Image (cartoon, helix red, strand yellow):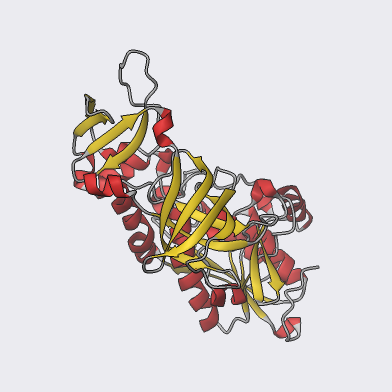
Length: 378
């Protein structure tokens, strides 16, 4: 049975659950209700549900809101739907479009977590008199010597720590993750035991607000200049072709370049938005050993300083953490030195830090900044 370790009797402990309409958040609500907590479900409508009802793998819109409402009724808890469309558009969708225009590769799920879900929704939960908030994320909250710590999920295949590095300490004191210790198979088994219709519902896929994963179409619709043409240029200066918008490219990309260069395999090395230029080159040119990271959120017990600290660094959600050193750099930033280097390090992605010993605890992270050479060229 779930125990959040809070001081009040469970029946007097109000817990707000962020219910997206999926199996994970629904089971979270059911477990808390079963454990005797005063459980309240909240679903945020984040974008036009009329257009998204038929989109499989979406969340927080249309059919998913109806699923959350039906699940709350089945569990026997109050449920509220809050219209956050305007906030989501400004904080997530617009920033997503602007980031692509700036030659970056954004991660909107992190932006959504750090703005809408763990800032705005936490505030709503407190306004409702909640003692805690809970979500269906697969990550562990562990009490350490200095307070609550974030740790990777027990099931590595479900771990969502990369997307939650920006949680602040006050948020971590308030938010709980009941599913962090269990595999997804157990979650679905629990959903079946509770008699929930979402027990077999597919997981959300890709970016929730991008139909069929065609992010370029969305950016072009939101930003008229997204399709501005430009040149595709080799690192050695040769003009190899033309493109119809840098939003169609990301660092490390090989497919879709459609360049004929005597058998040479080419990759996108960097994007130069001001010049509307896509720079390509051999795979070896993708290797990066030093990264500058902006807007660092640090969760370690000791402050980040000029003294190198050994960590494991993760530069994309699909990459494993690798050995690195991190030091404080600039105003609120950090410099990361990768022991063996990484390929396809893209501005706009997150660099997340894990403790070097075991790699379980999340020490924080930040946003990968544009390399100096690319910034000057742009």
